[in-house]
Length: 118
Image (cartoon, rainbow, N blue to C red; front, side):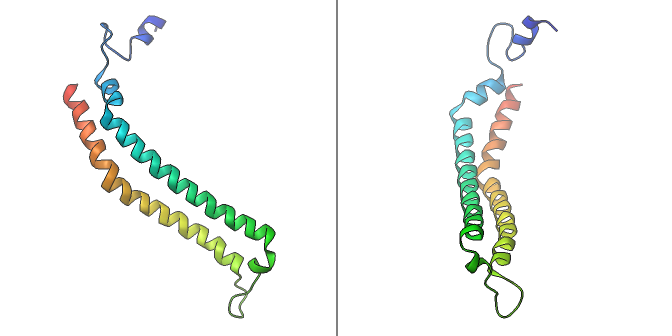
């Protein structure tokens, strides 16, 4: 394939944008992408902050982290470590619900619009 053929792959020979390129430039797509990014960055930031608190407590508050819970060998540090797994699961479930309600319907509408133009 020549360089000329590759450069014209994204649009028709007259230089008009493809339906995919039109959709990508549309305000609806940009709003959808921005909504998705806000959610992802927020949840990622919250999880990283929560993880950082866990690591900092382990390093700078060993007395607290080593505190035994109720006369067992179960410590605050172990509980916080297990809660890291729980929070990961909660974030995954929350994202699935968020996407189902806020992302998927708009993405489906955009997909139908593009497929109607093909």
